[in-house]
Amino acid sequence: MAKREQWASRTAFFLAATGSAIGLGNIWRFPYICFKYGGGAFLIPYLVALFSAGIPLMILEFSLGHKYQLSAPLALAKVHKNLEWLGWFALLVAFGIVAYYTVIMGWCFNYMFHSIKLSWGENTGGFFYEKFLALSKNVFTIGSIRPLIFAGLIATWIWIVLSVWKGAKTVGKVVYVTVTLPWLCLLIFVIRGLTLPGAIDGLSYYLTPNFAALKDPKVWLAAYSQVFFSLSIGFGVMIAYASFLPKKSDIVNNAFLVSLADAGTAFAGGLAVFSTLGYYAHTTGLSVPDVVKSGPSLAFITYPTIISLLPFACSFFGILFFLMLLTLGVDSAFSLVEAGTAGIIDKWKKKRIPINFAFGIAAVIAGLIFTTKAGLYWLDIVDYFMSNFGLVIVALLECIFLGYLYREKGIVALREHANSVSEIKVGKWWEICIKVVTPIALIILLVLTVIERIKGAYENYPRLAEFLGGWLILIAFFVVAIILNRVRSKGG
Ligand code: PHE
Image (tube, rainbow, N blue to C red):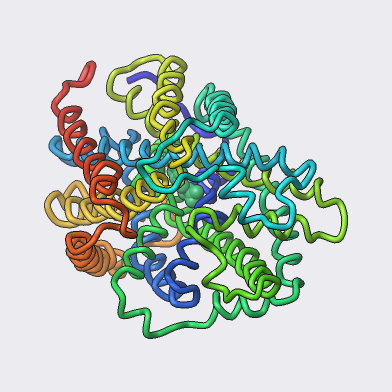
């Protein structure tokens, strides 16, 4: 086999993996999911999911990529030839996610320019829904493409393709900036948020546990899927990234560091958003849960509010903030391009650059629907299905296949491998998480959620919209993955 590309240093790998994990998921998605599922009600399931499923699966994915030195589809094929499809399925789900993820980055590009004049004025919510998105009445009133959002999407993709130009070599350099800059920025926002009047009401919504909500399976499934989304697990990304590591690299340590850095950042994002939400409620006289119409818009309403309220240099901080979101997002988005490209290169030994371009073009086309006037609705539906079903199914099947059906080359070999290179050794607790706790939890949650979806459509969207934006995409991905599994690889 040709030389596999490699990270230049351990730091490059750590930053790249952290960069993939920390993204819009922490600053945009985490606060809105937390908000949607009752604030303080969410943190406990989130922490349970992080420690029982997130970190153990991160160790599993790192070990799989590192041991077999292959990206998701072929690494799984090493475990058993009939498992390759799961790797493709993961990459396809990830593709579905990155298609709308980059549209949100396109919003950020626009908001960076809006920051110059603070164009959102006092009514940041009205500006976002009416002026910026021109949100239509319902999902099927698609209207036209919003040209500026489309332009933002294109700009995002140009940036992504340039960042992965030479694979791990380029990525390893870019992440030094895209990981460190956002942390500094976030700190400023947390401090400003916490010192606003009314902040305390927002914080108490965020931090007061609500034990009654723990009985609701929706909250738990949302917590697991948020953990997977945020840690980039179930996307095939961490498998590919670990496959570029030199032979002697610590796995377990890195898995803990990346996961904890990610969770810490999400928590900080929550502090910034909820304190501002408290302020927003305080000035409008609404209660905290009534401030926001639809979850995905949360960050685009609260953060502009904080920006306008900064004591000085508002525009400067506005630009800095949206640049921060972009730098956070870009390394997550390109991690996925890297994972997809590596999957194709491993299988068909193709040249990297044309694949990167093809990937970008396909994703722009897939993303068009999210740039229309009904884009926000579609985004909400696709995000829900890809994360709650797509990622969760991948994670569940990884546990079942690697933990039981093909355990010799799966969990047994991977544990041995992880322990042979890592300082911290994984023991029984890890196997129990992968084999018992996580699969049982995920199966129960999936079944309950499917029942709920049979009873009623997600968020009362029309059934047809739910089918097109959710089930149909999942089924199509499954079929394509199976077909790819059957195609013979070059030289293999
Ligand atoms: N982990 C990323 C985040 O939290 C999500 C992501 C992963 C997006 C991989 C694309 C590809 O934002």
